[in-house]
Image (cartoon, rainbow, N blue to C red; front, top):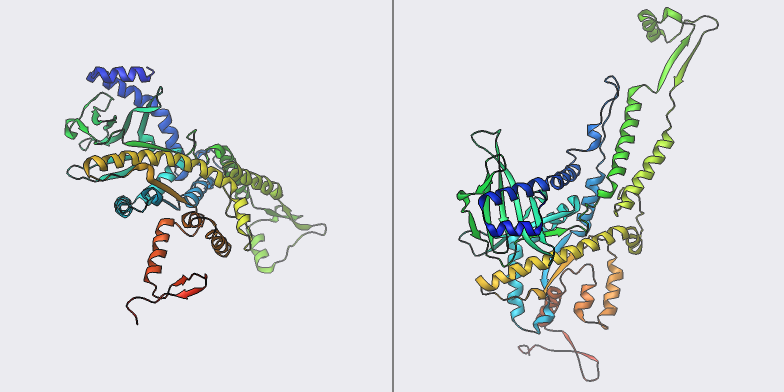
Length: 469
């Protein structure tokens, strides 16, 4: 049965156990194809299940090398290392207009980030999205604790159902399997059903016949004002970073594996002894090893038959496939020699495709992080008495990029006389938090007893501390 938003809504409103059990079974069966595809992509990343590993032998006596080249993992890890070097959260100082509340609110955000290891979680979430096309994050509050916690979910264990009319989640299901501790051949499917107010817990009998799970309290308030599972997309189409080039990767593996098998199957050269006839026996070989002399008739001859392999042609096609893999995956082949004196502008050109892909993902993550902190700040306001405007939060994605610090320092010196400190510092790759850097500069100026102060004639003089004579 095809489930639509209308049928799902009607089933929810009816609140009949049998109908909801059928709904859950239909949704899980309908999600099976998507879940399997995402598992396959993840297994490619982990090199657990790569197509070349399943290649059949033509004949059992033939060598059948199966060489899996980890292009998939390299493309994902390159993006994570480049874009996910640090994804941090900060506050916009300008929106506080010099209020002392800025330091208090910044402390709350910093404490939350430290408590949840948000930078590490963000990096892992970026890896999930790049590997399978999407990642999910769950917000929750443990019993007896007044702290928001976060965890990343396994992507293929989440079903997100939108109300198409308003593009809002109608409900979100998280499901996973548990083994029966008494009979390990039996597995139960556990479903956590989230809406904008509550979470319901269901468990089946091993055959997708679901009922509310009394062991987990059946129904609980999750304490947030919206669905606390947030999707983080790699791009609009939810494609994994290397997904468009899996065919090229498989072709590379097949050609390299076949070539290696061909080299290993037969020796590259065979000796012939013309005129030896049937004398090539064990005694003949032993005498040859001792004397190094071939006893052949007058018209005899000794030589080698070389096996020719089109090595240049193989190398040419492998190089072309390798180039296309990184080009079409919008990545960069770090095995290439770019030259030790390559300037930053050269790196910017080389990384242009990767940067374009990272920008798309950054925009998707910005949207999801905004949704995440809308829920979190609302919880803080209701249960902790902390009122932070989520629109004042800034999400900083720091690229892991080659730096020309000398050139940047010169640029900074020019900019500080033309624009605000925050704008100038924000353009520098070596300054992660412009607000924190401004604070440190202000502290150093206060602590410096001989700081220079311009007089009326704009000539520098030194201001003497009040407590010195």
